[in-house]
Length: 80
Image 1 (cartoon, rainbow, N blue to C red):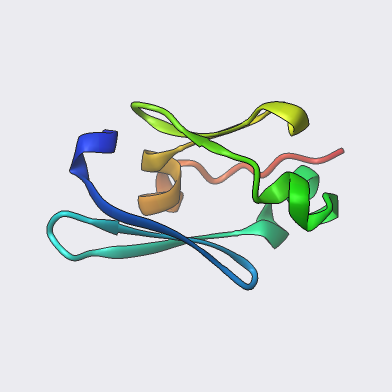
Image 2 (tube, rainbow, N blue to C red):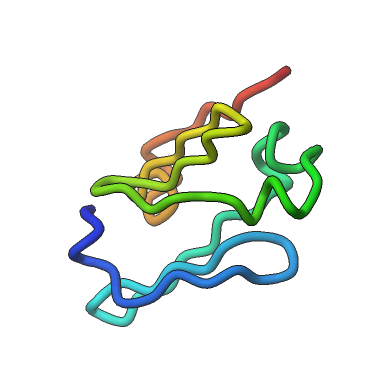
């Protein structure tokens, strides 16, 4: 999935909601990513949208759109 396939990206209380152009909805839950889960809100909210995913420069975290929409294809979760 590419940035151009997305219709909307918005912050929600416990993560980020992404809406694809076809209307499908996916949510990235901060609790699934230790760096995001443990970060202050100001750092979690400071992300950029790249061609193929989300980037948190200050947290050194990159998450692809594919892994958010198709988590079954990416079963491993990071551990600190």
